[in-house]
Structures are given as C-alpha cells and as structure tokens.
Image (tube, rainbow, N blue to C red; front, top):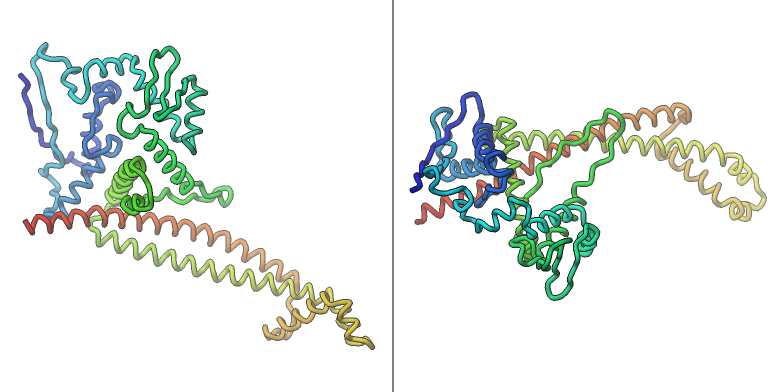
Length: 395
C-alpha cells in the first residue's frame, strides 16, 4: 500500500525564491535518481525551465490575489512524495505513463522508436528542409520507405517505423513545421560582426513572445503551434529570470528602467546621427575643393574661349563639376577654403567618433530591446493573470 506525503517547500536562508526553486527542482531531477532523466515527466511546464515557470506562476498568483511573498515562512512550492513498502512494487510499473516493456526497452537501448526519435532530434537543428532531414537519415544508415506515410528502418531492424507512430511532435507535418520554425529562428539570431579587437558584443536579448493565433491565421500548422508554445514558455521564463536576477521589486520599477534605457538609446542615436551628418558634410566639402582645384584651369579657359558653347560641350563634365563646387562654396558662405590636409584629419577624427558612438548605439539598442521584451513578456503573463482575477470575481 502506497503512502503519500505533501511536503511544503520554503525559501532557503540567504537565497532568492528562484535560487531556492532551482535547488529543489534540481534535487528532484537528479540524473542519478531518474535514470538520466528517463523517469522525468512534465505537465504544463518544461523540465529545463521548471524553476522559472514556478516563479512565473507565483507572480501570476500575486497579480490575481495581491498577496505578497513573505521573506520567511512562505511556501514557494509543494513536493508530492509517494512511497511503497520494500518489495511491494518496483519503480518500473509505478511509472504509469508508459508500459513497463516499453520503458525497459528504452532503458536497455533496444527501443527502435527511441533511437529513431533521438536521431531525428539530432537532425532537425541541422536541416533547413524536410528533404534534407531525410537525406541525413539515409546517410546515417536508415532505409527510407516513401508512401502515404514516410517510414524508417535502422540497420538490423526487422520492420519499418512510421513517423506518425513516434508520438506528438514527430509527424511529417510537425517535423516540417519544426524545421521551418528553426530556420526562421536561426536567421533572427545571426551574430553581429565584431567592431574589432576588444569590442563588446551586445547581450543576448530576451526573445519577444510569438503571437500564435496570428501565425495560425497566416497558415502555420499544429507543429509550429506546438514549437511556438514551448518557445513562449521559455521566453516568459527567461524574462522572469532577468527580472529576478536584476533585483526588480515591482513592474513600476521595471517600467522606469525601460523609460531610462530608451532615453539613453535615443540620446545615443541622436549623437550618432549628428556625427554622421558632420562626416558627410566634411567629406562633401573635401570632394568639392578637390574638384574645384582640378577643374580651375578648364573653367578659366572656358571664360576666355571665343566659342564658349562649343567649349562647354567639349568639357561639359569638368565644367559642371567646377560650377557645382562654386555653388556649394557660395551656399556654405565660405570666405576662405580650408586645407585638404585639415579636412582629411577631421574626417579621420569623425570616423573614430562614429565607430565608438555606433558601438554605444548598438549596446543601448540591445539593452533597450532586452528590457522591452522582459516588460512585454511579463505584461503578457500578468495580463492573463489579471483576466483570471476578473473572471474569478465574476463567478
């Protein structure tokens, strides 16, 4: 007869809620106690982000109830522990999510489905099309059978395994959607080229949430929707982790940070635009002075020509260049032309400033986008909690 115990878990002394949750969930998912993760099952969460998802749920609870998390004594999670008398039952049958024979096959490495799924998981991130994935499987030794449903057979396997029998997320349509989603995601995450030795790369941004309903309306399928749900959970979890790690105490404090970094970005953008405008102007002035000096003799000959119209047609390009330079000098109000050497030095100075300012521009833009994503993702999560609050009041 099994005994069940519900154990409240509290915040550890000297640790944040997130750190305490991480310690507890890491203990529960100890690879040595879960057959290297084979016994881990998740419901409405992901194992990799369970700690931050728990914290997100607490934030939603706070938004619904208005109840603050206490520093001491407050329950941060519950552990449900089930125990059996020695010899009453083994762990395998107790793990009810799958038949014992299937679990044992996976444990001993004799499950063809498990091996096929593992190979597909390795291939999906490397491929940009479904056909490329099929070719990859052939190269690894799998025999392919095409028909209404595509099937694979590993070396030594007697029967083919249809993709549709592998479970959720492994149908041909879902794999196609996952490959497409992965390709789009890779394009969005292309690294920015370094500005040189010692230049700082922008911090990795928290991803904005995907509007799944909008994507479905545009024609995306169920595989994409499943991928996007996991992506959104991880994006919200990452946002909450940043919120917790950086010590924000309220959404109002986060809002203030977003406004501050946005103002910093605007200032950096304005400074960069001003420097770029000066650089364009200085380069233009230098070019006009060079053009003016190079065409001055042609223009003097034109003024002395007995047949100016014919001379102009013969030297149209040089004369047009000279007249454009004179017009530029007149409009600029220049009484004396600066030296080309001085302009060259000024251009070098401005290019150095531009490089530094662009680096600052990139860094502040990255931080601004990061803060905006954190705010938008948490607003979305807590907004749903607020709707739930009103729904509860209506009941």
